[in-house]
Length: 258
Image 1 (tube, rainbow, N blue to C red):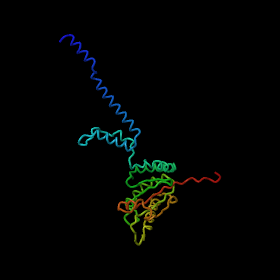
Image 2: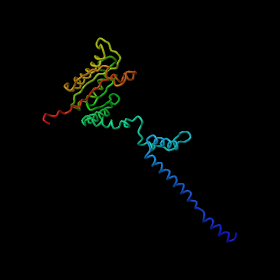
Image 3: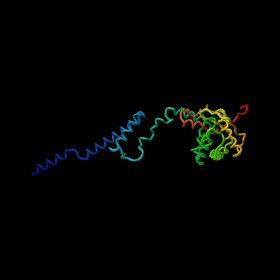
Image 4: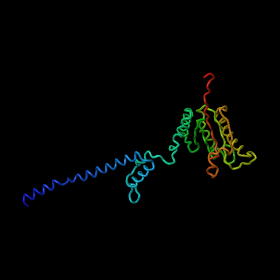
């Protein structure tokens, strides 16, 4: 090949684009698309965000449905569950919590810690409101069906619970509840008598066996008229058959002249 042709070929090669520019431009395009995606997610609605979330997950799934990338997706963080109470009612819940006195919150936290340490989570559930905290004990733990005499398991539960009740000086109200199945026996003509009898049995055990000051104690029977849930299934009826122990928050009285 002549020197003239070689010089011409080198000149043609020098005038063409370098091979690395193609790779570089592809990378920049991908980065631009990625930042546009991030920006769009910062301003779209939750529904669109979830749609992008699912589409991104699909992109990382194999043909057999196995996930290629392991571990939780960062796109899942911050997405509010549809059934979460901290959704449309967030403001109402915040206001409700704000109405609970600090003393009640402290009692509630102490009770939760105590129940966890004693392993009573499966036997006792706990709620609170501005009036105090409430310990819920299912009937099956304390009594046999249709009776108001404490079982051995019921006594064991109350013995464990007494340590918590002695921490506080507050008044204690023992409340008996039943389901809506009619009760008719010589001792308990109706659910009124059965629920009251059970509340009194718990009260007497706490006072006589656990030596809790009887001045702190009172008992109430509500029959079937304050259910937690509808009495439409056997499971729901079991939830309504219970004894509550309310630890009453006693507001400080303001002396006259203040």
